[in-house]
Image (cartoon, rainbow over all chains, first blue to last red; front, side, top):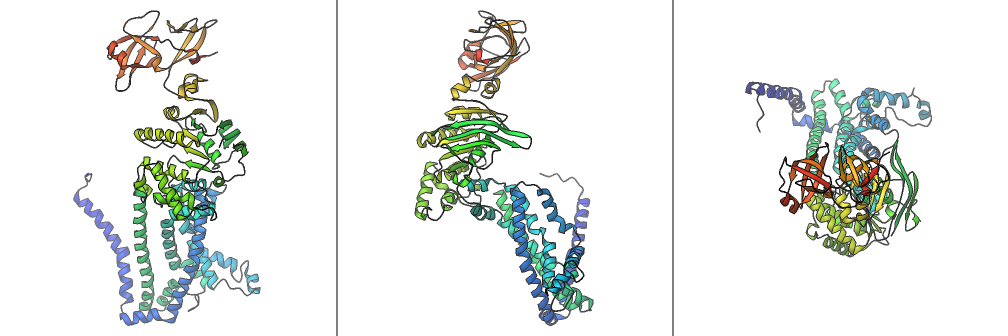
Length: 274
Length: 356
């Protein structure tokens, strides 16, 4: 079927504009990151990554993701299960609340935690009395990260679960399975690719988050700097090669995420058409 | 096992899905719940299964109140319209599921499970699909797998929700005959929901006709077809022609034509609605003995066991008439031809509803 009636010139023009934008705003910056990262050679690149502060930042970023992603996975599965499979009062409210972190500026998100847990915050005196550090410490960073990545898993799973309906679960129940067994043997396997997809997106956001974490972290070198914060500090100190070296790690993470996302999408699509 | 429901009520918001429904399914019976969509038949089936809950009334299994029995403890085999096979499991694992989820002390050995699944696949004549996934099967095959899966746990009752509703006409016919044969051998108490009157008439021991959350009539296929209690049941169980008329002694007066209705006795003339099945007309080329209605042939479909003829009567009514191939040949019917319609000598009185 050939429905293309536009003149060749117009077609080429539009394709050209699209490619131009893509090159200017996506490809060029990516090349720049690697260009600057390697501008002073391999040795400087590796030294920048092996610097104790850089390693600490990477470790903190990984720890944060390791805590935030599983917690949001549990929450995301529970919430999407409840929203997709049951009809209850307040379901629509819950559905819109899940999206809240997406519509709030991350800086505000960070500020919320400062106002609650900070020295002048609502729980500040109590926390100080019990010698618990939340703001400018790991718990605050994790809390802020959980907040901004809150919707990532649930958002992926709700449409999948809704489209699958309840019948397989009902069939399992009539066949004598308990609710627990039904969940693990029927519901979870049916959403396993959706779960993986959600984890990957959630992880990418958790590791890349800047705004919210920046507010609560306090920027203590080697202690409360995540990788994105580390990049900013190096850049502000005119250590551009080191800054871009650290940034290149984040870019690599993004590329890996993108490839994984594409592969999983292909698998899901095959499952649907089959 | 017998199933009894007593005075069941079920509301979805303002909508009365079931309104005081009582029914008894005898042990070993194959019973069809027949009705249009929204008549409450699926709600009733789901309540019996324990998948939905009634607002008031009782469900009894062999006389025992099932209120506190969970779905998994009711021993019901449920077959869904859209099969609801586990999409990530092979046919083997689908059928074995009910055996595998049994508590450890009573769970059969792997060897026993294998034997049982093989036996069921043989029963549904699909041994060769054992390692396939549901999406690799046709609709009819999937539905048979769903049946086998339900039977694996030796249910005390079989509940089928529009089991053949999404299949091709040909497959549907095959499967319903298969279901009838299977029931004749197994005698498992079976309740099945359908909106297809032909399916219900062909398969069921008894039919429950439902409408707007109520049971209109319960009876054998013969009973509900020939002795419908009201116009709804009559309409739902097959095509029917409908006339506004006045009934007098032995006659139905339609417009200014008085049509003979054999065996009808009325004390005084009454306005009425007259219902006539397509095969209860007689057509002739000339005005026959007694009075008859003049009509013009609008459409003929001779492809079938019976010949379907659409007529337009002089009084304005459109009639759907079925005649045998033999009658069709003798009459030499063609389009636009004028014919005379009279009523055959059958019992009509139950088709006559006297309106006020």
